[in-house]
Amino acid sequence: MGKLVIHPILQEIAGIFTRHGKQVFLVGGAVRDLLRGHKAQDWDLATDALPQEVIALFPRVIPTGIKHGTVTVHFKGRSVEVTTYRTESGYHDGRRPDQVTYTARIEEDLSRRDFTMNAIALPLPKGPLVDPFNGIADIRAHRIRCVGDPQARFAEDGLRPVRAVRFAAQMGFEVEQATLDAIPRALKTTEKVSPERIRDELDKILASPQPSRAFLLMEETRLLELLLPELASCRNIEQKGFHRFDVLDHSLLACDAAARDQAPGLVRAAALLHDIGKPVTRSLDLNGVWTFYQHEQVSATLSRDLLTRFHYPNAVIEGIVHLIKEHMFHYEANWSDGAVRRFIIRVGEENLNNLYQLRRADAYATTGQDLPKDFLLPLITRVDAVLAKSRALSLKDLPVSGKDLLIMGIKPGPIMGIILSALLEAVVEDPALNTKETLLTIAGKLKERYR
Image (cartoon, rainbow, N blue to C red; front, side, top):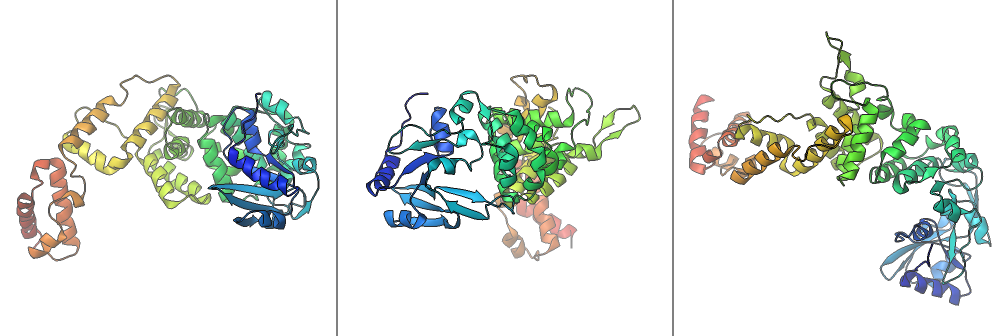
């Protein structure tokens, strides 16, 4: 590991502490990332200065967690969390300490941290690394290991087991066996953690290069059964036809494929959850073959419930659920242009690329073999050609509106809605009809029909 380069703004902040006779260390993930040769994203500082002393040192300080000794310093456009050296005791809520005691030594502060790789301190402005738990060696060995007794660490904070498996997926590290063995005994503590905290960890897992690493560790330690029982139930659900994997392995492989394709989070989540309805819908047909009729609809319903449980924003939920509902589309070359336009309308033009990525991930995960280079190309080519001809795909794209129909004597209500829908359907089938004169003529005929 070479020389660690410290950002100039951090050096400035450190200078303010040292000029006032205070110690300050860069701690946590920033040190870990620097040691791995990565850019440090979030800056966390530990100091022997009390919170009120930190507030006095800087013009803009927010007391974000002052109860636990933490304040946020805003300095030259950066936000830095600064925490007074402390020890902790009592964790009745499974997440936060009941009591915080300030201490004089950085080593005592490091002893309360989760993993050895996160319990290394870099003195500022300079000085040798403080590494009382051999975190540097664990980073070199690509090993995730608790500080001290893993059962005690997990009993303090139920989120730590989820963080352990998340780090494994993010960094490609292995969870040390004693640390891994302690996770099942901490499930009752993890159960106390707020849904929002779990959601944030799930998002980080989905954003990792290989999400399946975390989910398989979750299955092994029963975290999956606790947090994502709908996904856990997919184990040993065998499939038909070309499928080489059970539903769980297929889903994890699809999620990995979406990550490898650098798909957005919506697609990765949809790939993970797109088949969770299969255990519910599975049945044997007359030939003794497993079928999963309407599994996409059930998967969408179960996914909505799951995502709601973790308090995902409504827009995110709707986006994921919509992709899952539509993932079973089947394109045939004999589709008319009107059929292609109806497909675009149903999916939404803005969702097409996401749906393509989901289908690629799903198809890859059938066998785990690379897809033909022209996979989906016939459909994509048709869609692009149809869109190039006409983008009249919704009522707002028509040259007539309810106001025009009102002038014709068609009153607002169900009949007006039926006529507008009929006009749109006519244009979808034949874009050449999308002129005001033509549509008003059609509307006049429909008015007579519904009189």
